[in-house]
Amino acid sequence: MLKDKNIVLGVTGGIAAYKSVEIASRLRKAGASVHVIMTAGAQNFITPLTFREITGNPVITTMWGEVHNYNVEHIALAQLADLVIVAPATANFLAKAAMGMADDMLTTTLLATKAPIYFAPAMNTNMYNNPLTQTNIQSLVDLGWHLIPPASGHLACGIDGVGRMPDPVEILDFVLENIAHKADLQGKKILVTAAGTYEPIDPVRYIGNRSSGKMGYAIAAAAQKRGAEVILVSGPSALMPPQGVDFIGVESAAQMREAVLKHFPKTDIVIKAAAVADYRVRNVAEQKIKKNDDKLTLVLEKNPDILKELGEKKNSDQILVGFAAETQNLLEYAQAKLEKKNLDMIVANDVSRKDAGFNTDTNVVKLLYKNGTIEEMPIMTKQKLANELLSKIIRLKNQ
Image 1 (tube, helix red, strand yellow):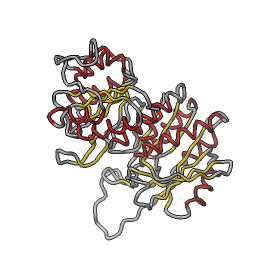
Image 2: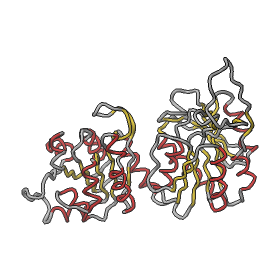
Image 3: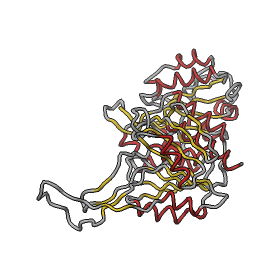
Image 4: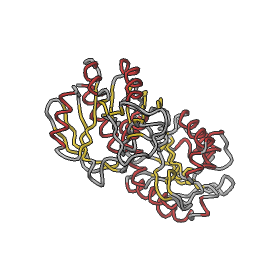
């Protein structure tokens, strides 16, 4: 898909600039003609010569230097580009781009181009979570720029958190998947549930589970990128809601049920990735329970089965997808859930595996369909799996 494409790679002044060399290399190997624009800050981390040797093209570092191959370089390069990737995209760059500034070759080119723009933020966690940065990101997304979500992990500043630029292969996969899928969910309304629920014991304590919400959030983000109107109903999670989705935060299973049933009638596709608590405490204490005895007895009662209720209510035009997180008898339990709850597809995963299930960045699943088909998926990132699931759901929808 990238063969003979002209791609502008913008590199800004962050420590992750070293990863951009591999991005350029991978683009070149894919058959693209790569044109690199470096900001002044980027040149403090890596030299233009490196990119020139990798791409075989002149590297643009200033608006004021000698003209190489273009009559009016920033306009010609903007018109030449089939797509633009900015990686890393620093907080400073995002602020300038959101304001429409054109004070260097990169911002000037982006202001003049009509090509699709992809950007991969990379910065300190607190900088990324700062409301000003989030506002700038949202402004760019609203303008049609494609956000490549940052990863979580150990950052150069020495802390762990969100803000790490994804690996080059993940960035290229994101771009390729976006190009391949384009807007194949345009006009569809998708409801996604994510994370676990908290069932209160008293004002301080609760019963919960280990779900991080990563799978559901990845599905919501992918669906939004593919043109869908997305409602994400999420239990408590440390994740930032994906840009561009209608986010509804809840805590208990009862609150999730209320939100889901409210929006379900006008939804084309429902993907229930949340780990909803099966039981709740019958009598929630109004005050904190004091530690008086060696034992504490809690009486639990069943929560409503949201997925089963949706299966009973869904019409022939709606697609309902569930998840089965199991630690044993995976296919047996998933098949029973598929039939009992009138699902079109169920995603079964063994959460006892270290490379799948709760709190991991990868997943290994089996897909069970109501026609009896079982499809085994290889290990992959949750972002990639999200797009794979959406593609299969689209095929179900079109049958």
